[in-house]
Image (cartoon, helix red, strand yellow):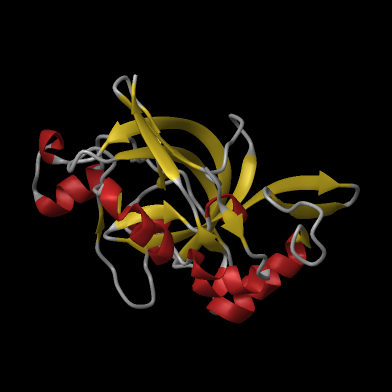
Length: 231
């Protein structure tokens, strides 16, 4: 059980991501996807974002998926998946893979937002002491986002339609479907430069290596291992 990371600048992560957001961690839930694979849903209350079009889709909460998790019958472990404390403020980079939100670069794509004296800093969850990567001034981060994405971090306005694991009122209105027909965790996807589509679950456990590569971790993660065992 090992995951090897290679350090890369935050500017590269900004460039590789389909979207990013600042928000507070709320809760998590391990789910069995349609094809029987295991994933963990991390749910965040967003305060600022780029690429998610939160105002258009009427969402102020977002579900970010990570591979692995523990259910009553099975456990799939993937080293490098980040952990959070309820209420913790973070910045996450995300990728749109098969119409789902997935955390990019696992813990390496996770930054804690802290106040340090008069400065607001981003501290990497995996390499907090690494020069030029572990600690980034928030002002410099905002400037890099603007320079690379061509957009400023947008304030997320709370709406009457928060995203919850089993319902998305905005999507139901658009599609004419009832709440019962919406898959668990299904939400509108982020606006990537190449594609826009619905965000729903489903990723085969046997293709988990492909997922890691698709998340843009080829520059940040070279290998990982997981295990699955009956309880």
